[in-house]
Image 1 (cartoon, one colour):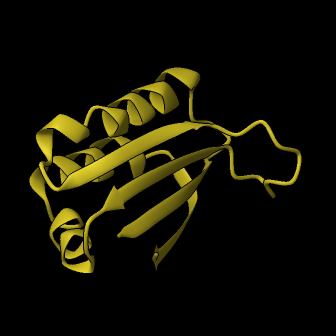
Image 2 (cartoon, rainbow, N blue to C red):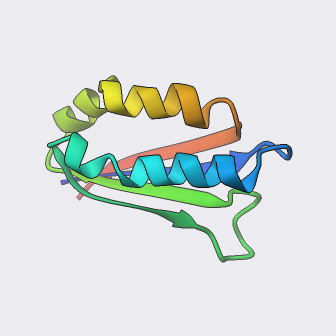
Amino acid sequence: MLKHIVLFQWQPEASEEQITAAMTALQEMTPQIPFIVDLSAGKNFSDRSQGYTHALTVTFNQTSDLALYQPHPVHQEIVVNLIRPIALKILAIDYEY
C-alpha cells in the first residue's frame, strides 16, 4: 500500500469559495479514478500547521498507481484549474506501508 499526503497553503487573496471548490473537486475524484483505494480531504484544526490549512490523503495499492494518478486527466484538471491559481505552497509526501 502507498499513502500520498498533500498539504496546502493558500494565497491570502484566495476566497473561501475557491478553496471549497478545490477541496470538493479533490474529494470527488475517487469514483473517477479507479485505482484510488481511499481518499480524504479536509481543513486543518491544529495550531501546529505552519500555515498549511488543508490536507489531502490518498491511498493506493502500489507505487505504480501513484505514477498513473499524477498525470490522470481528472487529477490534472483539478490541479491546473482549481489548485494552482490559488496555491501559495504545496507540500507532498509519499510512503509505502
